[in-house]
Image (tube, rainbow, N blue to C red; front, side, top):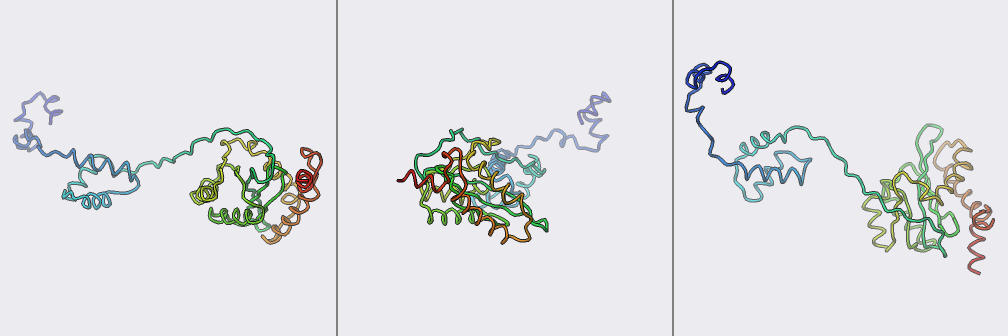
Length: 264
């Protein structure tokens, strides 16, 4: 209306007549205050951004407000909340850098990491490796098609039954290790979870060096028909590695030999 008046340089009465609008309608100013509804909708949009107007309305009613659902929907659209919002992924904070030191005894710090390969038919297979940083002993080499966080927790519990409880576990920031199930496991067992910084795999250098040997000797050396073949070779390689593989960093001792000499 105001644009028409400015362009045509005509009076309010003439402009209202042209658009067939009563002058009372032009002068009318709503006295309804929707600020409370707007604040409540903004509150729910911040707290529950993936929900919509119907759920917001139900929650508002449960709080005791008796606003009409049409009014809530009108203000919902007015605020632009009906438009699709781009999902923002929450980033995990980058962990603090920790020095990679050789522990002075077994079960002080374990390192864990995943490896990937494919079977002959193209299906992906993953291997969870756990080693003791003290003597680089391979504690677990478990192959599976998938590793839900709860399965990872069960494998760590099984390893603890065999070797005892570590004081800390060093991992990367994979989804299996940042899951609530793994955090709860570390809390229940009073284990410190040491996460390396993003994009810094050598902060988990002991396990990375172990993975390199495992890949060269097993994953790159064979073509597997099924998961059982991967596990059989992994178990055999683990025993040979622990008992026969000389480490230059351990004075050319094998992991088992190094632990036995130190304990003696």
